Length: 93
Image (cartoon, rainbow, N blue to C red; front, side, top):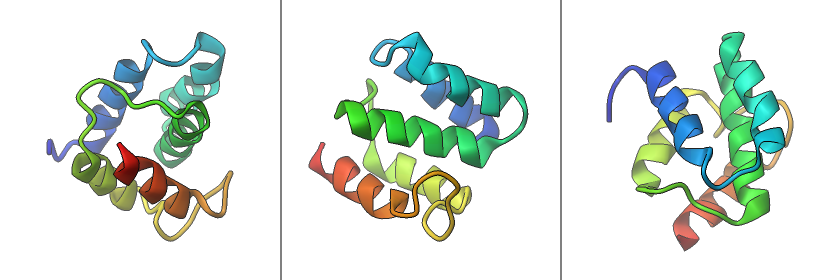
């Protein structure tokens, strides 16, 4: 994976445009634009998990790497169980 995680996150958000509604991505993009990358990623995960959808070219190991990089496996803002939900969602695809 590209080691520029902030740019990779921007790409993941962009790839999710086709499967999520604009209002679902509005806050995600807001957090990203303000440098709140952990919150942007967590919000993106929440919306994807809620929708039960996967972006094109979804590769669990790549997503897992970025989720761990941003520390969502140990700490979260919006959902204290986001790591477990991510693992269940990601490994079912």
